[in-house]
Image (cartoon, rainbow, N blue to C red):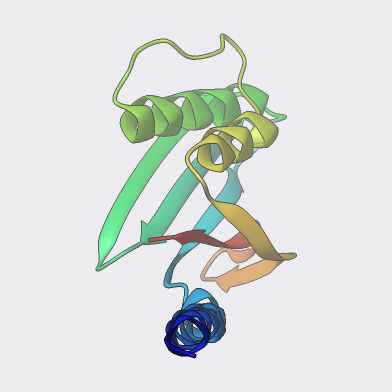
Amino acid sequence: MKKFAAVSISTLLILFFALDAGPAAARTAYEYGELVVVHRKSGNLKSSTTVFFFYGDGKEIRSHKSENDPRGLEARREAFKEFIETYTQRKETTAQPSIITVLNTLGSDGWEIIHFSDGQDNCQDGTTPQSTYLLKRRK
């Protein structure tokens, strides 16, 4: 009889901890971030790209490049390259990075896209293309 009582108490304890693990697993903490990419053209030749990444407790990474390039491709690549180098704190980046390279860099650090918005930002000079990515990762 004592063996049965000992076994049933240990079984109850195991069952209690197994049931308690469910809600604990549901209480996973996340941190959220926002990646904003703004492309501006001023005049026929001048273009610029600004990349902002706001995350954690007021942390921010910002990169900006302006080039004499009508398509704005070089300004984007340079801004993305500067962002990746600042975020990873390494000089080993792709020669011609794109927004996909930036998102892959953030993804390799645990960031996951939960929402994407592509629209126009209203400013003094008119509308400016702006892409916004909302991200999250486990703390």
